[in-house]
Amino acid sequence: MQSPQENVRQRLKSLPAVQYGGLTLPSRYLLSPLAGFTNLPFRRIVREIGGVGLGTTDLVNARGLLDGSTKSLTLIETCPEDRPFAVQIFGNDPAVMRDCAQLLHTRGVDSIDINMGCPVNRVTKNGAGASLMCAPDSTVKLVQAVVESVPLPVTVKMRLGWDDQNLTAPFFAREFEQIGVAAVAIHGRTRAQGFSGSVNLVGIRQVVEAVERIPVIGNGDIRSVADGVRMFAETGCQGISMGRGALANPWIFRQFVEWETTGAWSPAGGFDDRLKLLRQQLGYLMQQHGEERGIVLFRKMAHWYLKGMCVPSPLREQFQRARTVGDVDETLAAIIDFGPTRGTRDQLPELSIPVPSGPNERW
Ligand SMILES: Cc1cc2nc3c(=O)[nH]c(=O)nc-3n(C[C@H](O)[C@H](O)[C@H](O)COP(=O)(O)O)c2cc1C
Image 1: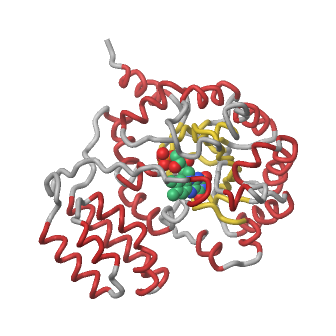
Image 2: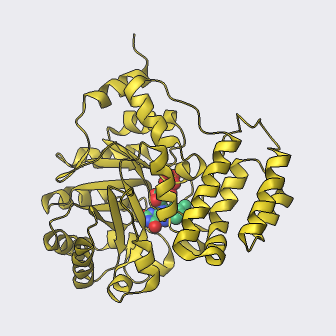
Image 3: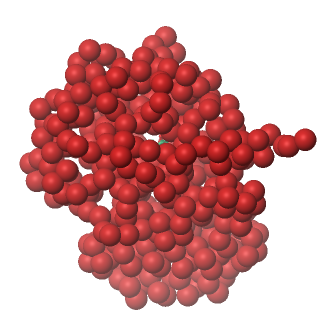
């Protein structure tokens, strides 16, 4: 008798590739947007390792992009290796969202994703992000305005609803399918939940059952092949997306593809592999922003690299104080010399990235 994992694998192998309208994704394993992390340098890293079906930018303010804000323009920077590539926009004004989508079309993006999941007050108080889930009529009109304005696939990423009394994701998914949305990604929590508790797989299944043919991408708490198998098995989704799981283990997409193809997968990289990625990602950031700014911008990401490598805290702190390539090299030499505090250079303990604390207000 086949194991449950093998059953899921055979089902996936028999499915066609995930289609976002006319765009065929190279795999069903997608990178979930993580503001502050899923920038071009990180997307390049995960793509070089392989297995990524689609990379998406951090959420970009539609109005900011139209106004030519430097921050927004930097967020949408891409390169030939960064394909297929979606830009995620947020806003609550249909005309602004439409104009922004048209601008993105002229810039050659492959797909546009509308943010309907962001729980942060700064975004929801202006009627954008997850609060779009509270206004069904105007939200459907807004999404329709975007879909009709461009020949590109338009997708929506949303939560299950605002709170447990308002689980509106199945309703929206059905409506969106009718107006031509190419796919929906569902983070299986409500806005009220922030990041607490666990992902509600039954809730995601209800979204899968609500649509006729568009792909539903299941998202939330996937850190390993076993977690992904559970998401596929219990929801019937066509694809999955990983955010924190990819930060902790940039090999995760390749592992999924290996598993789907052969049933087995290679381990995540060890100490030296992570060190190589760290250097490479920092190099890409410095190319984009110059040495000083690149090093400062890398600090957020370096925190997780160094944790994953089990670097002792005094050396992690030293790295965070680096201002020049010379400082970085000197600290990395000490890090290499010391080695990991747990596990071995070849086999590090699994890194789990906690959910942000006080999510709706602070992160
Ligand atoms: C630091 C952080 C930033 C995030 N930024 C975004 C964002 O810009 N757009 C978005 O749709 N979701 C964002 N999310 C939500 C993630 O895309 C994802 O839905 C959530 O983290 C659950 O998936 P995971 O367990 O794989 O991380 C963010 C989450 C975190 C932790």
